[in-house]
Image (cartoon, rainbow, N blue to C red; front, side, top):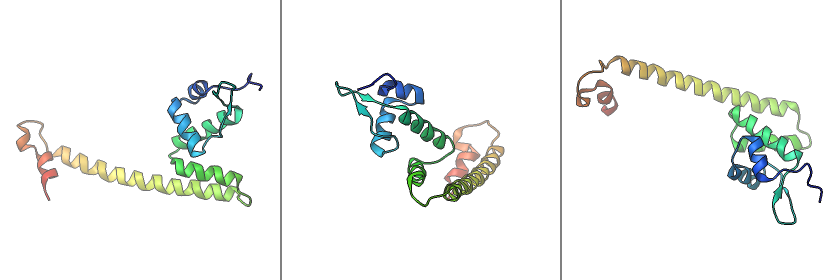
Length: 136
């Protein structure tokens, strides 16, 4: 077996910026292809695995879940899929991000209001922030 351009799991993990357990997990989930094995049984990953790991990591940085990444990869292989299908998924993710940003903005506003009620002095038993959190 030609092993010159193949990477061990440790080298793949290092190149991908993940740990070995993450590589194994992605392999079990089918996010990266099953590797070839050396005569001694070591996993040996090819260029496709390196590219796929990079794809998964970049998609995660954009907020896609592993399930969504799996769907993107499936669309790539599915007959009849088009860029419109991928764009729809991206637009769905944008809408989810917008919703999260709105939620975070509401949380921030509430926290600013709460923090403004507290002088930062006195015992915690009289803290207006804790009192507001205790209210039902």
